Length: 381
Ligand SMILES: [Mg+2]
Image 1 (tube, rainbow, N blue to C red):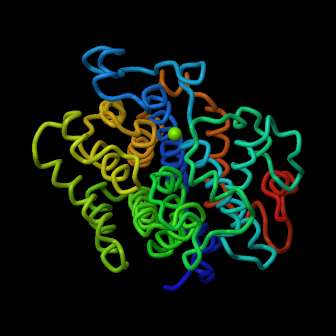
Image 2: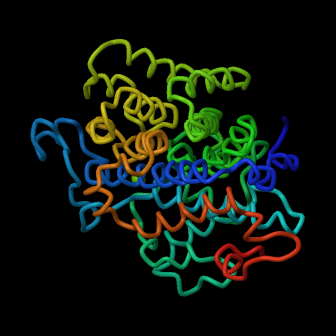
């Protein structure tokens, strides 16, 4: 397996025949859960991203944050983690739709989507977006700067696409690669090695350090296992096997093993989370998110554990929420948090579009014809 320009077996066409109604609904619930769960975790951490644990406890009580706190002028505000995750989804749908034209290079479509995200960080609003930018880039609420990562901004500042051979920000391993990569794992019709490879290649568009790229690939592969119904423990174990074949995997492997080891050390606590790191780097954020999801008694417990620490609370909350949502589906998310979440309708609409594309894509578009409504949402140009 050498790249992501793969064969016909990875496309949507072969998948459709095996999707029954129950399977489609289960998949859609995991997609919704993954995207909404990540956004809820992001929003829970948004108000304390730059605070120490002591400062969080001083401001919000001995339990720390137990509910949304105001950030960016409202409760339930999401940050760059959710914004970029949505554009990952947009890029993946576009890649599948564009395949009708004979073009098949998903990293190019994901890169174009990330460039549309970069425009939301630069422009006041969507006035300059064109028809071919699709619907997501015209969502006005996305035009907001929510402490975006520097490597993400600089990596996407010009139109040269970073690749594994020639990555952007070669020394960077910030968690910006991991926090946006859950949607790759939702490509359930793909082989795990291709999911891993695509996430790694797309990570290099902003971060070139091997750990930055491999941690993104690992996260995508874990989500992929969950979306296919595996347990989190099994998905992590399988991912460790996959990681071991890649040069430069040691930091990511060690971090995941620390997370598994921490589970066996006893009752979860903020101190145990802090022992895994602060989450500013890719491998630490991955380990912290995975640990909190592994020990979660329920979604609420896991998410609060994931945001109450002195590090990158919104990213670790987002990663944990992606995992818990993919495991349990949307109905397991605390409904009051879903109800108050910024961008909920956009997230749901995109989640449903992704699930439709993956399970019913050939009914929406193909070489013989296409829904014009679908093509205006996800233009082939
Ligand atoms: Mg953030």
